[in-house]
Image (cartoon, rainbow, N blue to C red):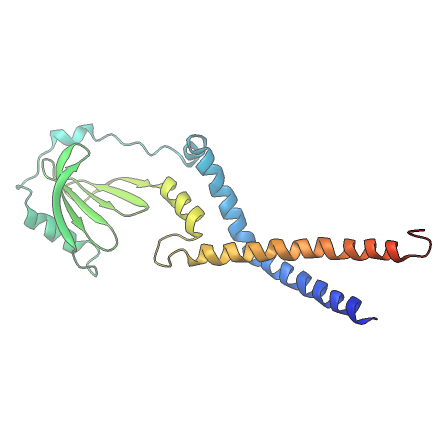
Length: 202
C-alpha cells in the first residue's frame, strides 16, 4: 500500500532536481530571448538607446584616388585583410550609390569604391569605413542583426547552426513539464486524501 506514495515521492523529487538544474541552465537564454524579443517588437524605440551611428559620406566625392581603382587593386587590398581567408569571389556593383568592387571572403566582404578609393570591411555584425590611405573613418554595429540572431539561434554566428536554440527549447519544454508535475502531484494527493477521509462521500 505504501508503494504508490513512495513512487510518487521519488517522481516528485526527481522533478524538483531536474527543474532546478534546468532553471539554472536556461535562465541566461530566457533573459536573452526576452530582451531580444523586446527589440523585435519595438526596434524603433530600442535602437536609439545604443547611440547614433549615422555617418555622412558627402565629402567622399571631393576625393579622388592617386591611381585608378582596378580589380587587381581590389584583390591586393583584400589579400591584406584577413590574410588567412582565401578570396571566394570578386564582383562589381554599386555600394552607397557608387560603383565598387566586392571581394568576398569567409569572414566578410571588402568593398572598394571605384570613384573615390574609400573602402569598407563588412561582416555580418559590423562595418568599418576607411579612407583611401587606410585611416578608420567610421564604425557601425548592426545591432538589429545581432538581436535577431540571438533570438533565433541563441548564439552569435551561424557556425553552430540552430542546435543551441533547439537544445534550449527542449530544456524549456522539460522545465515546463517538471514544473507542472511539481504543481499537479501535491494537489492531486491532497485531493485524494480528502476524498478518502472518513465522513467524505456520505
